[in-house]
Length: 339
Image (cartoon, rainbow, N blue to C red; front, top):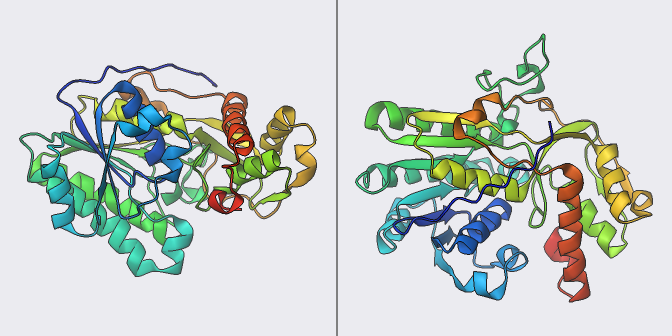
């Protein structure tokens, strides 16, 4: 069921957040939400271009953010950032996406797996002030055949059979989280989004729907590289849910499927066209459906309480509004949007 829940947690004075992979799409939205609250937030990223944060932040919000450059594959680098800024809350998003893991599996393993181990190990060594790790898993670690054969839904406790390196790495990270709980008592919450869309989503296997929105705003043709249905999550919703998780009192090593809007790509294009008449004529849908489950149960996520799910029409509309403002100011650059 589509629902748009407003969750406005109050920032606590003692909270000091480190967001790894903060210059990516979900990271940018996570940092923005913390800056808007007035929470202390530090980015941790090997990259140095904050353009995704810039395109969604006001100047005042941007000035509230502390930027730290660091390498997730080096434990000492992670530990220095945690200590230099007295971090109490970790939101771990740093990862290479499917195409990059496929192109360079050893690098993908270092970033996605070793990097996650480093985060957990650094947190374990600072258990007096860091009580848990919140991180992004992925519904992409499941094969379509992992859905329940009767209901055809992917249940939260389904056994994963990854079909690519990225999925293997994400599955490994949930195992890492479990062992750190069993052996060290370090709690963690993993969230498994599926197809994230919205401003900043310009890389990855499922980024082409957002790129199609950019192209429509620019009046250019675009191709969505897969067909069929998928579960869409608005990037801001994922970020806000991560913050809810980081403030949760849940104990253990838990991982949750995320909810969203189950939408056929043809209907996604129709929604773009409803905001930008004629856009449907510029957008082509090509390729097979994604090899992942489309109907995904998010029942277990209720353990966190109410979480935001923005209706697809609203999310697409907000994305178009932001990209339109960028176009009018000359800052909507195709090469920065993955076009």
